[in-house]
Image (cartoon, rainbow over all chains, first blue to last red; front, side):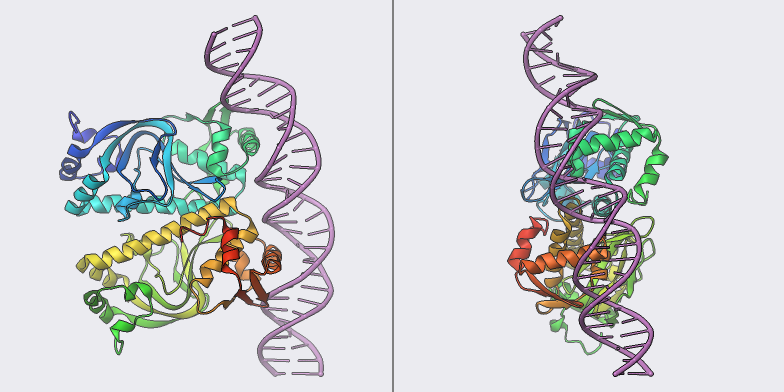
Length: 226
Length: 226
DNA sequence: GCGACTCTGTACCATTTCGTACAAAAGTTG
DNA sequence: CAACTTTTGTACGAAATGGTACAGAGTCGC
């Protein structure tokens, strides 16, 4: 990667690498713009590139026959796509796309695998992240099975808030409904409830987080061990 | 492990090992009886032993504050406990217990880690299984969010059927309700629906699978890519 | 065989969520 | 500003699920 000061990676994974591992990856990394809704992985299709997010959000979504979907993974500059690859598979059973635009450093699957074969520390770091994302999905299974829409919404808002600059972000009810796999008017009402409790402020296309603690309590431990 | 013909492992993972990897593990393996409801891992506590199931079923369950639970992982002789350990952690955020009694070969965490450090093939095999279990949990997230109780029940029955000898197995509505995280009478009614459709026969404490294909269709693709 | 216990079937009402439709509000474009 | 699009708010009945209670059926131990 040209002209990149390797000590200034914005991606947390790249940041956590030892200098020699950074040097190992750097030449293969290429900065890419992430456009809203851009597909990063398609279910059951070979993964060609892996993206280390710098800015923006990515979603992993699972869908049932008939098309309805739920988000099962969410990441920003704390993470990456392609954890399937990291875990030794060539593809994922789920789709992955850009939920909020931004930028990422991407690397080809081949180059990543090559680098992993050369550095156990790199492999271990990425494996650990793959595990983290898996645990997140497992908590999502718990949340989907056990808590109410308004509580799942609180959980989702927290997860996004963690991965975004500042206390507000932009998203429509329609989109939220897709991610949670619920009815759009249901989201509208649930947001009103959270607003009534003064946990958030919600305007057209925007959500402002006001009380993280309140949101946390709503999640009843499904937010994860964090 | 004494008196164990290493070519006759009943556990699919152990079975899939190359002879030298079997020889590596065999001395550390110890056959244990698995008693109903026995705890194999406790959330957020160090894992001391890993169990390769030969007979019986194990469940990974997640619970929210207040105690209600959902099953997020299910395995039999196809799998093992301790995938967290395999993935480099010392503990899991979820509980694991024996759902149907049987037997397992167990190994201490230390011995397993030692063996993994000596055999890349062993490590890769167990990693692959850890990934499989993660994917199963992710499909559970999809199922919990998108399909109805009677359909989730169908999915659960299929998963158990895959891991059990014969077409019938023993389980109470109460227990099923716990695993699915729903109300007990809801299970009773859902089972009646499946029975009406002639997909299963249900008697006191027993479920007999009659039509896998029918059950599969009900799952709407949440059963997994299988 | 009797009593105790476990498991299942059923009922009732409350709550949550769905499907759908439509109107109001906010933004965009010409 | 007018027309159009997008987003949000609201309403209504239907379906799914929850909480709870209780009766009947099956099983077990004595």
